[in-house]
Length: 188
Image 1 (tube, rainbow, N blue to C red):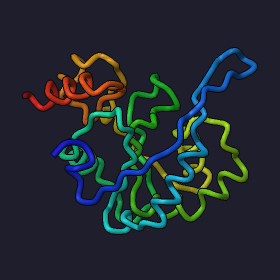
Image 2 (tube, rainbow, N blue to C red):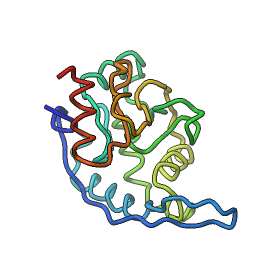
Image 3 (cartoon, helix red, strand yellow):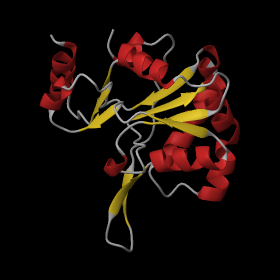
Image 4 (cartoon, rainbow, N blue to C red):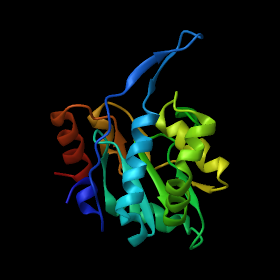
């Protein structure tokens, strides 16, 4: 089973269309935090995260393999019951090695996040990308992190999906590119 359908538990949540914001610096970034705060409210209300050791938020345009994620997480040897998130890529890509295409939180970190996300929203605001917001919120709430630079490979070229060390590839924006990446990575 592909993507989230290969997980022990899964749910599909819909967000809102995100907007680009141009800053005084001249840079433009995606501002999508408000929609994702609402999604995390739904995660809290649904409670599925309580049935698993780890919760993943995965973008629809990310190709990922649950079995590879399990192997990567096992290799991290995370202490049980601790509030932890996983920095998922090389730090030179952005955000100190944490990109939002695939966010991995321990059950304790997910619980801490969903109980306190509105406090983070109040004090941090939502004029940002959701991945930076989530990382900053987790840090402010005292969650620790583990690092696995080989979870996410950020590249739009499906040929990069042949690099077997990675567990996820992003972004694969159209269905044909997504399927091509999946087939290459799966050896089909």
